[in-house]
Length: 136
Image 1: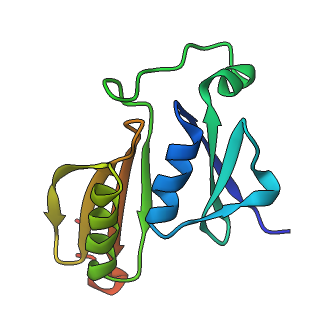
Image 2 (image 1 turned 180 degrees about the horizontal axis):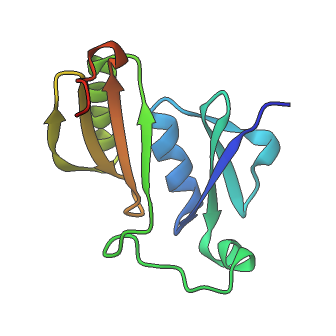
């Protein structure tokens, strides 16, 4: 079995959060979805578990941070082209997210950032590994 990653994020409105990620083009794995949480498929081995805050609290004794004012995690995903980066940001904004930071273009890597409906920080990037400059 391949190793998979499941990123767990607390959300205030599960239906709205599912809709947001579906509008970005990501599917929902209904096998792992109910009224307490949903599994959003980002890639073959990458999933995001959207958990309503009360359910999320059952997994930790820590306080849930307000991700609109506090950084809890930076989630980065790679895509095949620069156009795909722009397309995801456009979809995120149209679905109610925020185009968060200025575009970073290093020629070998192109990156943009959005905040989802709950303020989670997502970085979307294209990288041409053949163009990475030599390190000193």
